[in-house]
Length: 175
Image 1 (cartoon, one colour):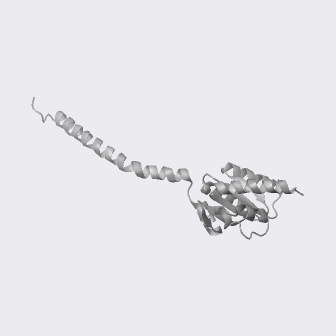
Image 2 (image 1 turned 90 degrees about the vertical axis):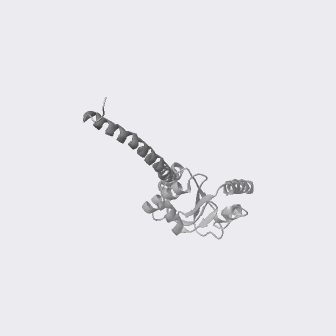
């Protein structure tokens, strides 16, 4: 059993983490083996997140007054939190992929950019392209008109050079 002061430290630590973040996934992990839990923690770390197993009443107390208060209310069963301050899509993809291979790992709720989302929305979020892919597409869309303009401007000079070259070859120009 933990001492009351240790419990208060855990509560303060969790409250500090919850106050600073806007991306949180509340999950259930019943019947996961230690090796599966270890693998899950590696997956979450690789996606830039933090994974934490918590007690339901501790989560509810720590969530009071934070943006995550709604998703941490009335939790049942074994609960864990996966959260990140970076890209929520990467974490959602990693967790969804893990859940496909380990059906005992489930989603309960989520919080993305301060908005509460349900399990369906988490799966939709995981289906989105990553931030890097979106940026690449955006840069392509921005770059395409400039590239086309440069091609058109170069084409005028090239076409003029071709006409002059043909005129010289056919001796159309008088000396």
